[in-house]
Image 1 (cartoon, rainbow, N blue to C red):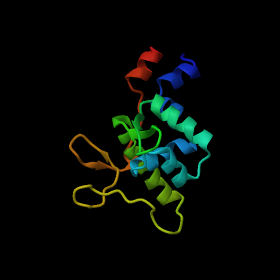
Image 2 (cartoon, one colour):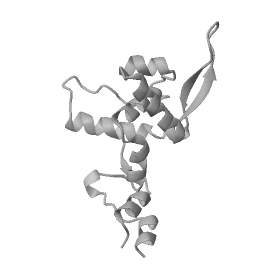
Image 3 (cartoon, rainbow, N blue to C red):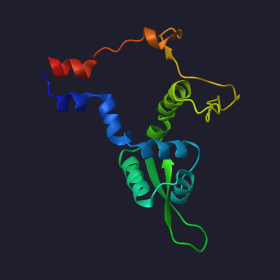
Amino acid sequence: MISPAERNARCSVARSLEVLGEKWTLLVVREALAGVTRFSGFRERLGIAPDILTARLDTLVGAGVLERRPYREAGRRQRDEYVLTDAGLRLTTVLAAFVDWGDAHRPSGHGPATVYVDRASGEPVRLAFLRSDGSELQPDRVATVPGPGALSAAG
């Protein structure tokens, strides 16, 4: 039998939460997906304390979600901006799932704050489970089963 620590080390959810499990972390990612790249922009949009923002940015950079890039405005000292990496952009689906769940189960009474659309056409899009033939499967028809990492740990 594997220990809980080994189980968590093999678990994609547990490993993801090591990086993304803080409230402010996903809110920083939300703002980055909206185009914010500068420390001052994150502070202004989130109202977050500077020390907490610094820690969250460091975590996201360390995990490869954001990349630090130096910039310098005329007459000012060099600073860093924070740009999403491919790993950061892949969090779009994670945030879309939070939006979907929050709109359904924690509505604000004001309607959706975010709507996901096709960048080219503006047509609304949504997340879905798809079979290999492209047909949609409702969430109540989806099951989780142990993957190869879990099976090798048990064997």
